[in-house]
Image 1 (spheres, rainbow, N blue to C red):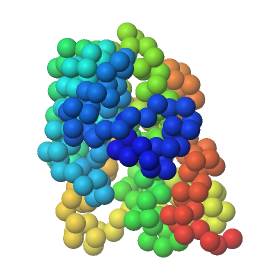
Image 2 (image 1 turned 120 degrees about the vertical axis):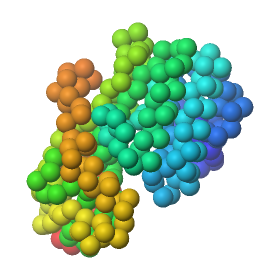
Image 3 (image 1 turned 90 degrees about the horizontal axis):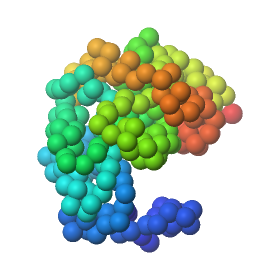
Image 4 (image 1 turned 90 degrees about the vertical axis):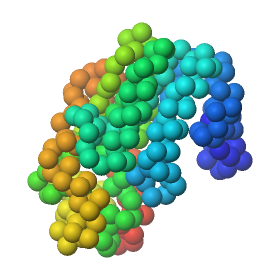
Amino acid sequence: MVRDPASAAAKALAASGVAVVPGDLGDAAALRSAMIGADGVFSMQPNSGDPTSGITDAEEVRIGRLVADSAVEAGVTHLVYSSASVISRGPTGIANLDCKLEIEDHVRSLAIPTTIVRPATFMELLAQPAFWSDADELVFFTSPDQPVELIAAQDIGTIVAAVLADRDRFAGLSIDIAGEELAGADIGSAISRALGRPISYRRFPDALLKQQPALDRTVRMFASGVAAGNADIAALSREFGPLTGLDAWLAGSGHALIRSAARGTKT
């Protein structure tokens, strides 16, 4: 389901053989219409924590519940909801994360089979220009020696497709998913190899964290280990096949993204 079937992204999906239907996640009638005849639904809402999403925490919860309820009303036999690994151990105190706990609770209450997948930190997040202080320095949530679990967006698709294809096996489960766990310094080293030049890595500075309480809470959450060790990566690889490590992502779909984010014009 896409908001604009005429957009370049939607046209690319259609050209690859995907049946595209117009709709809006906040429109109950459009949701039910799009879901009629579908066996399964993968529900991934805009993230209220992303400033570009344009939605509040309450709106994310409303949309998440609406998608779930619409799936039931449309006769869907399996709903897969994409949550977040960082809430696996309970409330974090960060509203745009904890709102996903409300959606999870609602999904579990449905009278149809459901599965919850909880992705770790997206590798694609490393390519956000906001995390690059200049062309040679990545500034992120973790200290150089702090491990963080990462996942490539393509692996979420691989895992969810397998879950939807075997409803009886995965119904009722909540699965934390990640492709690799690395310390911050190792992330910097991997990007250095990919770009062919030294890239330094550091955590957001204390001075900035004092100015931005929400960012400070997020950094503290990573420092506590909440964003590490939730997924059994070896078991996931056995279940779903080899998942994408950071080096492989940087050599593939992530290469152009990182070069662009780092304004990689140096040789």
